[in-house]
View 1 (cartoon, helix red, strand yellow):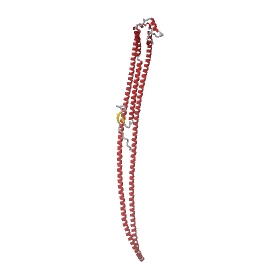
View 2 (spheres, rainbow, N blue to C red; view 1 turned 90 degrees about the vertical axis):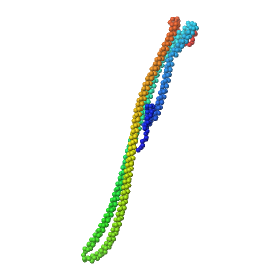
View 3 (cartoon, rainbow, N blue to C red; view 1 turned 180 degrees about the vertical axis):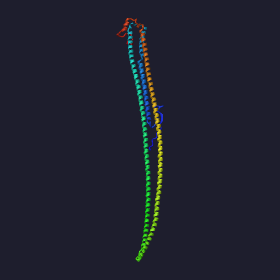
View 4 (cartoon, rainbow, N blue to C red; view 1 turned 120 degrees about the vertical axis):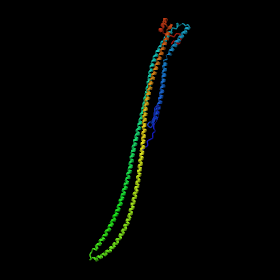
Length: 469
């Protein structure tokens, strides 16, 4: 049985976004460190891009405001005109103080009208350019904010897509790891089942072999007993045959004696002679028979003793072998049974240990799956909260942008009002200048003719070069 690799229980900790976000360090989330590094680098790049965008936006806003106010600084133009008018009045007052006669300086009024027409034309051109610049600035501002919003939305979509891809990758890794663990457990159970089958087959073969050997030994012992019984039966039959032969010979001798006694007297001599001869022969035969009987009895006694001794010896050897075999077979059976019992106990203990390990592993995976489900739910919750925060930030940013646009529009309106007020002040100053006695309708007709369109061929030698442009 292959030992499964030891796994640590996953620990919780602060996640890549900080509290309350958290993640778990485990074999399933073995890419958390790389994910944290990637998220930190992504957050740093986003922070740098955001700061750079804010800095560029601030610089662009400052530059636009500066250009706008520089372009819209009408007071400088008005002050320049007023300064020129003041210089003209100062020179006029100086001339009055010096009591110069102004009849020779008939070019002042046409010069003033020329300057006023030129300044009015410049003001109109400036107003037209200002309106166009304001429209272009507003268009550029709207375009810029549209691009910024689109970039933010694209960044948010990319980030959400990256989070979805990362979540899907983690889910796939988790599923693959779970399938792999289930497949490994199935293969391990198959292997253990095959091992149990092989062990049972092996023990069954050993048991059958022992039974076969015991049966063969019993058969051999039975054959030996049969052989011994057959030998004893042959010896008994041989002895019975010997006794039967002896009885037949004795009967033959008795019959011979009966036949001899039954012959006639005529043959008495011959019979006596024959009887004598027969007696001699019989005596010799009897002697021989007695000797043979004695020898046979001796042989029988000797053979019976040797047979008994040999039989006892063989029986003792057989009994000894039988006892030894029984002792060996009983000892072997006890050892085999004890080994089988020990092995069954070991297998049972191993099976119990395996069951405990499988139960612990199931409990671990159950806890791990519950933690992963909690992590996924927490991740979805934090992602939803982050999306809501981001959408709220986008709405706040849009409101802030609208407020900035409203503020810029209000500043523009204030500037227009200021320009209108400056224009009105300028017109009042011009009207005041035109309402003076020497600029009224009671002037000489020659002066009116000059106001209508007097063209001077050359400069007046009595005037200053600054005011004769």
